[in-house]
Length: 255
Length: 266
Image (cartoon, rainbow over all chains, first blue to last red; front, side):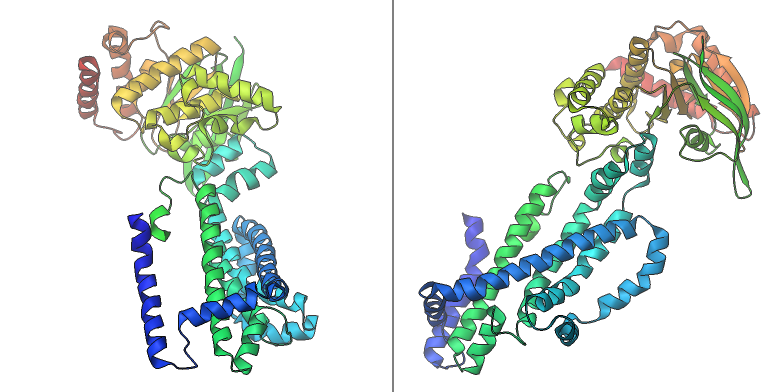
């Protein structure tokens, strides 16, 4: 319980200060949290279709894009990580592709896929695949020699080598990549919704801004924060379970 | 007795460096043979070529059986930390049906006295217990030959004696053929039915010695037995004659006496 207080005191304090300043300043650009919350309530709870038609599809695209990037990234990463030659060929290309800021590719994907879900997914996938991919490569390379030898001596089948040795050995690094990718997914989800669509949290944010409805704009921003926090917390819980075998997991560090 | 392992003119070079220079020896079924040689004499290369991890530059290794198992020195790296003890022992048995896999692993864990630790993770066990898990894993695989690479070099002296006796018991009970690579002269005499003494690099066979000790051995009485002492000195002399002086025999003897007296007093 004391830990809970420790963790949230600063946060609650800042909200309180903001509330106070909001009241005092009475500035339409910076509404106090209470107004933001009531706007959020009106917007998403009293009119649930706003939630089901904008928020849920956004979350869906975010998760789907992240999942696609994760599967491709892990599979490709393990493959490349276990082959020095493949990495020699592909390495420079990966570094080059990773260096391109994903938002710069939104126009390209717009041309390729037209506006809509596929273009948004492509933006998310291309943007978030790199942390997973590069961490998987790193992880796959980190299988120590004794485990390689042990596996070779026992002549285990290929699937067991990949799924039973390389994947678990790489999993701490993979999870680090997955976490970075997940928060990046949120960013790219919003960016992909800023142009060419009237659907999703990002587009609603833009719309609120254009209509000078700053309270709603803030409500959207707060929603994104809550979403990011929630997703990260959920992934951490999964990670903690999956990596429970590690002598000292990062329990305290992220709490 | 049939030969379990036949090594003929085995040689290996890394570039210009000759690690092994033509070794010929056999290991008979049910025998425990120790390979002893100075540090860095190519013992690891020998083990890697026999186990098939490295293709030798020349010569032949033939095993009378389909597979062998290796117990490595570094148990903490050889075991898989994400698997339970049971999972680790089942690791090489994936081609078997689940029930048989279970049964074999449980049995092998009983043999090394770890039946109760099946559900623990390796990291929850002491070093000696982890090495016992590695031994159980190797035994569960039912290898034609059990290769051991400095198996007890990373544990304390007390645990080392326990593990040596465990190995002697298990291999007697299950008629396992064992080849132990070690740099420890005492250990080679205590464990072996036969000792292969290697020279410094490139490794060549200096002597192939029968160990004139009864099958039943005891950490206190065997080690003070005249035959034990005589053979130990002989191996030590051979190691010095075979090439450069490999180790300080006096220092080593003193350390060994110390660890022995520790065991007796505890």
